[in-house]
Amino acid sequence: MSRSPTIHSRKYSPSKSSTWLNCPLSTLLNDGSSQETNPQAEFGTQCHELGAALIGQSLNLIDYDSELKPIEEVIKDLDMYSEEMQEIADGYADFVIQTIEFDKKRTDTEPLIVIEQHLDMDFDDDAGGTLDCGIISSLGGGTLTVIDLKTGRTPVYAFDSESGLFNSQLGIYALYFYKSYKDLYPIKKIRLVIYQPVINNTNDYEMPIEELLQFESNVLVPAVKRTKVENPEAHPGKYCRYCAGKAICAKRAEANKLVMQALKKPVSTMIDADIEALLPHLDEVIQYAKDVMEFAIKKALNGHKWSKYKLVHTKGSRKITDEEGVIKACEQVGIDPYATKKVAGITELTKRIGKSKVDALIGAYINMQLGSLVLVPKSDPREEANIIEEGDK
Image (cartoon, rainbow, N blue to C red):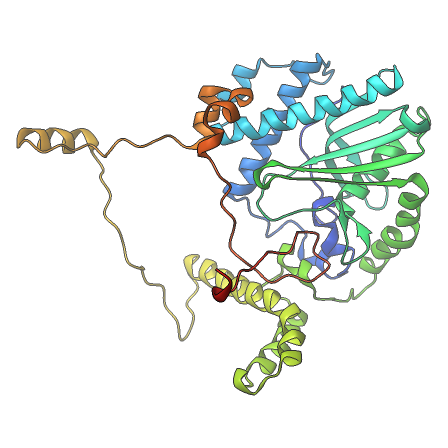
């Protein structure tokens, strides 16, 4: 086992590769000066840490860089630890271990396993990232597997059917994992795996090593060269939302203004073809508007005064600050201060009952609630919703 601290590139972060592979200017805007942490990202980081510890403990992997902590100590250091984090980390660890055991049974050999390994990337001094899990087995003459844990709720895919290209973040990790060990292990096949348990989205993509090397020469290297010219160009797209300059990029503003001008036409005069022509752009327009508003609010919070706008408080809400005081005051006059007892959530019940027994015990009383409906391109891999007309009920 090899582990290193989580270190990420600023300009050339693999997680933002969908942006800088398409937009050369983004590497100047993503120089690290405007990067901010957020609770969702921190939750994901801590979830990865717990998952890595669980995998290391289960497989008895040796960390030569630092002393392995007991799981209890790891959890104590996680200030965002929760039942949800434990469930995600447990599932991730189980998935990785099952993948490893599957390869071992089919080959009768021990695979190479790396967890949370930092990979340096030779196309720039700043380039690098941390691989969640990498496995090299002798399966099929040599198979390199990259597994990436996602803790967000936006679906992520190992292969993008719209662009016809595999996930570039996982591809870059696979490429430099391959380069690190290609002289020690024969590798013929690459497998990219997304494990996203919060929305039950686990998917993978397999390819020959030649496809990965073609990605390096035909996509990665030319894209990096375009970022290193004197005046790198901006190419707006759906990937802009991951760029640090998303609210101030003039090219993105120009592209969205063109769409907004088309929206000024009354909807009643638009035919289906007009609406369908706009649909692919609306998510980006909405996201752009949100990004600009968020930027303006943050700047105001830092003391900037907008000439025609001001900060105000939205409707507030009352909150109890001393529960013991409330209980005592209510009980003195004979009023019950407690809320009605309710059934625990499915996550908590699963923890109490045990995953293997949940379906048998309470499965008959649980059903899956469908999410809200959204319009997506036909190329989206999700199954089309079955809409029942009022007259068909």
